[in-house]
Image (cartoon, rainbow, N blue to C red; front, side, top):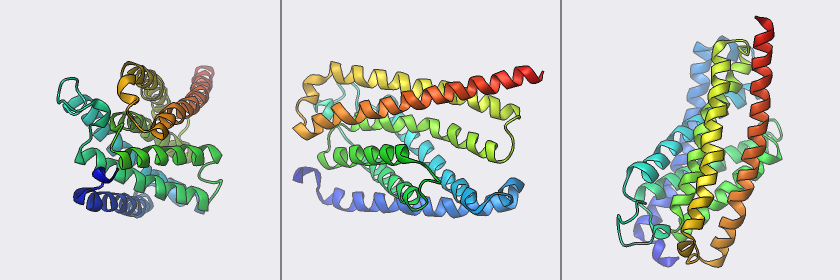
Length: 258
């Protein structure tokens, strides 16, 4: 662990976490200013609804950033490709993955603080559990310098967040009958299926095929991989079922109004 906390990490980790927190604050304020000027529905919201509206602004930015960086590192770059280097895949990391983990920690800390401060207005116990598990997995991987590939796979599932947030925006802007609401609901369903169901199946398959490398992690790390991802996967399946029911209900209403 000491070898993974060198001079670079001593500066990079705190700065990236702090940057994540500052990013959330700046985007929160920008979302507020833009919404006041360009969205009439915003002025009609309650105080708590405005807070959630602004909160979803920075959660959307983090989701786009996390998904883009994760996709680049896992799919496009050579970092985790077989035969790219002699280092075991489980031990591979980069400055970019460290930075993304730090920013994500800053985001989850900021979002969790708001959730707890306004509890349960911004999210119930399931959100607290989700954020807690996510921060634990990211922090543990960052400290050990191992299993970055698996944390990045999980971070890519944030790609569905913009669709979730747009659905909330349209709902609170009284646009549930619009075509955009229906198309976004279908995109959310498909995106969730790919990024939070099928990807997790691939995730567990990858762990199974590379279990010889997974075994080299400290016992606590192995136990974490055996507990945290399955819990997140179960939560994803539960939310997927709710998304499916919501989509079918909306499509049913649309058919009856024709």
